[in-house]
Length: 111
Length: 109
Image (cartoon, rainbow over all chains, first blue to last red; front, side):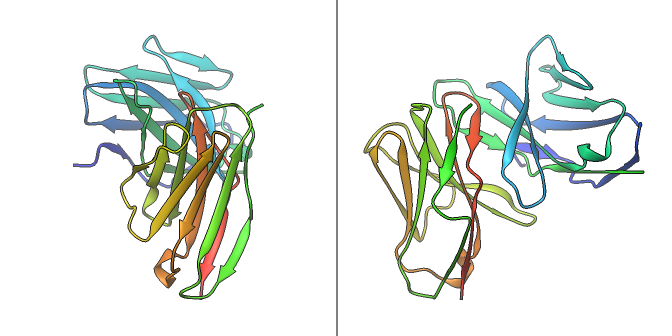
């Protein structure tokens, strides 16, 4: 079983739609969680951290469900510029900040 | 802003050549990482380093070595490049969340 799993998609949505991605992780000792965005042929860039209580940054909302071991990313009012691959990242506790990356979910926002 | 730079954006080498990829970060981060990224396989960790002169193998270290002589610089070395090492190579540094360089697209002919 993969440590961090994501639906690869692609998710194909019209502008203005709301779309949500989930990411499941297998290690219950996971402590830190992030969403990254990667544009085609570019490096991943940090989108947002995911906090236990959930957090929001503009149109983006991230949530953590420890009991079911998944994190989610909700994008409201999708823009064409949101088209990208979204990577889920999980870090175990214990001081060694070695992240485990999901393989990413592809989002295509069309006019 | 954290800045991570990589020595080349594009590189073409021949089979058997020794290849050096350099990465520099300006945020005094302890941790530095080298990944390769291939379609359908995601990011795979090659090597990482917690401190100067320290290195640890990642998931796919075979065919690679690294060097960290200064805190800000982490080099990836392909001792004898092979065609299956054609890939996008990404360097990252972190204290907690990672910051990536722009990547080096290496083609081995």
